[in-house]
Length: 335
Image: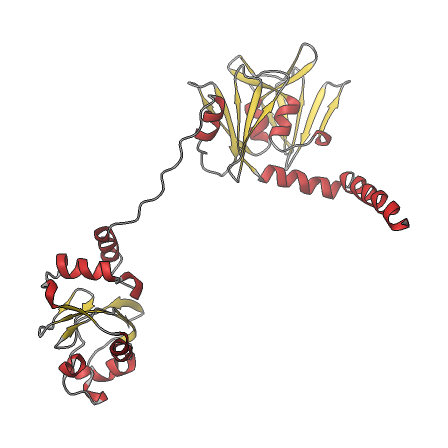
């Protein structure tokens, strides 16, 4: 029973300690700043919009709307600071000097009526000055403050938007926030459509050939035979799993291939075959595909290394590749 009475007090004390611990507060503040993707103020609009790095858009109410004066946008200090990830305890106001200081990753110091701003220990001369409007609201020029705190500021004149986002980041997509402002649901991005077999073929070709067995699937085999190689469809045959286990083992034997081609100046590094074959007495080499076996046709991309460069060569495989393994005739593999 004593444990149940003491535990809530311990939790409360722990929370109070953390909330007043500068290191803990700074960690929260830095995390808040890091989470900002884009901040948007709209002239004459009492709300500001914030999108975090997870894509969540929030609408936040202010008690004073931003306005334009002398070509500059003014925003209430507390809301501007909070929106940029600076909590209330990092905002200080000196009534005697009428100075406001915002402390984030850098500190920004401004005085009401003065066109000089201190940012990160440097003096920045502005073309406008902070001011106080009834009933005592401190208004700061948004661009200078945001830039002083490490944000980039853009202006959308058509929609009257002030756009702030972290320095060094690309300009964000404003569609979700604009949709929120205009009360519209943002258009959903269309689901990516699977690539056609022709697109996959052209992509593989531009990238140097097929690098994985999975790329040479049944659909790709059909396309190659029908559209590229133009073989008779009736001549195609799919090798059984048992036979393929034997053929694939022979195809993948890089040492044997190297031995059977002693004059080859290249080092064979790997071979990627396909299970889909063609029944034919015709054997040829084309691009990066090796067509082997007098009765059947297999795809095999051979990866080589020459002078430190990885290259592909599919023309050297010949019938004597299997000769050293006791298989004198290719046609025996098709029997």
